Length: 133
Image 1 (cartoon, rainbow, N blue to C red):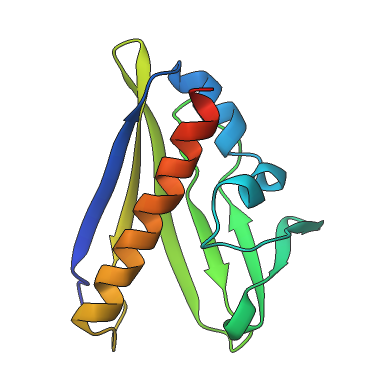
Image 2 (image 1 turned 90 degrees about the vertical axis):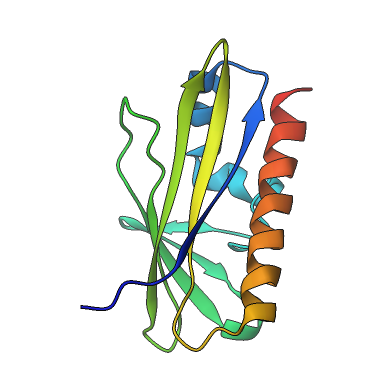
């Protein structure tokens, strides 16, 4: 069994966690804050399809709506490679804490992993800016 190194990237948002979850869990809202996912997701059955840029078309399947703030999702690349992403919105006082677990994929060097982490943080900051307006 191989365990990949993990990094939890998180930040606080001054807005009720349920409001943050309700907004962030909607795939059609992701283009406004999750630039690392895809610019334009469109529904196709249980999946969402989008342009993943240099990796081609991506297929995303999200966890069903739930009462726990879980927005986990599986991203499948055009070449068949899949990545499971853990994204959670949890209560933090009167606000929310947003947590993304970044797993270091095999073959990813230090620089690429740092760039991935910076990109995730940028996306979470975009979500915060939208939710705190």
